[in-house]
Image (cartoon, rainbow, N blue to C red; front, side):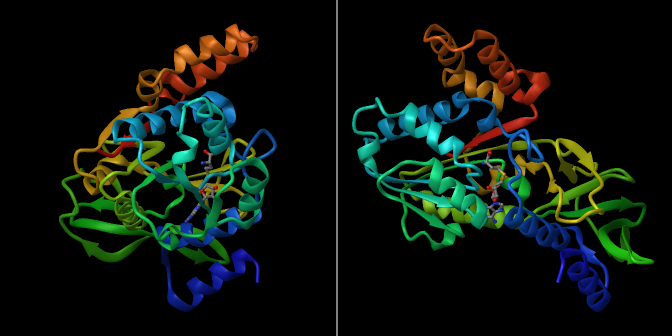
Amino acid sequence: MNLESHIKNLISFNGPIGVDQFMEVVISHYYKNNNPFGSKGDFITAPEISQMFGEIVGIWCANHWMNTGSNTFTLVEIGGGNGTLMSDLLRGTKHIPKFHQSITQIAMVEISPLLQAKQKSTINFSNIAWYNDLNELDTENCIIICNEFFDALPIKQFIKEDDGFKEILVTLNNGKFEFIKSSRLFHNLTSASTGSIIETSSASLAYASVIKNKIGKNGKALIIDYGYVDPPYKSTLQALKHHKYHDVLSDLGTADITALVDFKALGEVFPNSKITTQGEFFKTYGIEARAQSLIQNGANANEVNLALYRLTAAEQMGSLFKVLETR
Ligand code: SAH
């Protein structure tokens, strides 16, 4: 059965569904059937913009590894896409003595069989394995990284009315999908003004708890994504198809659907974590010096500087994208 018929059946049998259920069904179908990245895909992510992204994430991992006694660890990436970040990370840390030997295993957590296959051809490492879910990994002391993973996890949306909050649901009207408000009222969710939309993601919080479990005492996690610390009080749900905004409710499964990540809520799962912007984080870990050295080694200066600008400038990805480092 195709995706639209499947969701239509869901709604006909059960009534309107939450944005979370809608997102979950659409996204898992999308990721299982498309390769969304790069100029021919639907969107471009930071690791695909420049090798510097993965290299600097590698420096961050190595830095933590050194600071904590150079012990062995499992290196985990969740939602690794084409495998570009991991492959740049490994190449960029090759020269660090004993770092690669300390990685007991690389664990790639990836739901898409298509992308798992792609990662197998991109990443070259002696001991590497693939998992569908982080829960399948039976080890602690992991260093865990993810870029643009959390934005793919489902959210619920609530809109403030004078008498309380109503959940935003997806329903069918004459065979077409549309958003409606629940008749049920939710009280005291927060003190937002009338018309404000708030978003919650229990799926994100649950996944963050599993991450917390897997980093144990000595591990560390790095979560990079577009998101906010202070809620925007409006819908952040969006669909992208071939690099253009697309109606969330039409041609289901052909566009990528995401929502901004609530970093404040994630931060509550990891006490004492540090949240910065992508610009700040990558500058702290030396992206400007890395750009210079690439240019000195013969890379095209305009291309490297443009990539540096796209990754770090506030008006590009530098400030909308946030970085959470656990402590
Ligand atoms: N990190 C990559 C890809 C980001 S897109 C990059 O920056 O280019 C989101 C990735 O998360 C895809 O690889 C997608 O298949 C994967 N993904 C989505 N939901 C997932 C889930 N529940 N478990 C594991 N991987 C998931």
